[in-house]
Image (cartoon, rainbow over all chains, first blue to last red; front, side, top):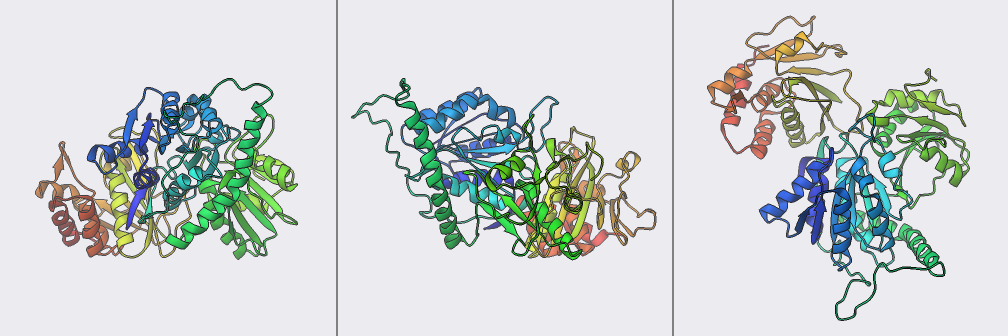
Length: 370
Length: 175
């Protein structure tokens, strides 16, 4: 059905259709509408889930872990400070190989106190063993949430998945939303190491220096295997529902001599900048990174790269720019823009491309215009 | 792309007006997005919402700087906000007022949404509802069709007085 919905409503609607047995959550701006909407679905009987209102995000993830280890589907949502309050449990969820799905509405960290879009919150969780996808529209928030359950619960993955959407720009923007009949797109969950009272086992026990590294390698092996599972899931989604997704969304890249690499809504706005530049005769393209973990390969050879980071790793650089340098040997013009919801328009992005200085870093709004 | 900027005060329903307009445009077979600009809102403070309508999917998320249409739900915000800021050449204004007023040469339409809401007894918690009747005025201006306006209103509100108010605004718009 075609309707109009916010990103938060789109996520909640997908969760209703995926029908998790347990949802444990704590409200935080700009995510609150997700868990409010799910609570309404549970109250009205549209969603047959156990909804556990908890006293903190740490407890929200702990409750999801406790439920998930019994072998049932679980979901939670958070943002920014809430995500970091649950940080210990975020690590635990991945280490315990629990396919929990979480929506994170990307928001800056205080102080200065700020509720607007930034990716640093989720980027700081990038080494936890969670798969992370970042969406660029309300429709994609819905589609990615549906796919997240299938990917997380796949026997070759069994790792948690975080679906990221930009605070306000997506969480509170209203876009067309085409919902689908999911049928058997998400198979029933089967957790091989679920608690079975008939066959008691130890969970989370001390693991010595002679064994621990094997568990870490096992996470990495599944992370590598997830590349194929993601591809297969996105293909199956396209086949059933007609909307196509890839790890990286390329736009007018075939003959591009300069590409803008960005994430989330900035990655969509960059497409408009590309159209503008093409009209001026600049052979530009854009690549929107959707999956941060597992980190995708990008075809950047022989091209200038303008990397826009809505994040920062202090004393190091923009995470995307530095990642492209590490994985593809790129020397990007690294633009730090959009922090804490800073307004960045397609005109601004076109400007970054026109006056790019490969290898240098540029803070939009701080340094003199390039 | 057709861009609409809505000026109102917190609690007057500007965000719902944006949502209704986007939904009506979608029912017309167009693409549309609506985004409220979230700042430190509180009841009564001037607020802005944006609606974009296009024949193609919309990829712009930044704020509207050059609107085709400015909708002023509460003319008192004009004391503190320059509602004509960045107006596109040929842009139009729609105002909640009995008579159009001079807006620096931009064609201005007026309709007494507050009066219509009071007449139709569309009052919630002491405030007249402006965001459903305004869809009728927008239909008269050709931004959406009246049929889609009524469809959007009925999808979001079951009370048929909202539709009656929109029809009244359609009839009573003064150009």
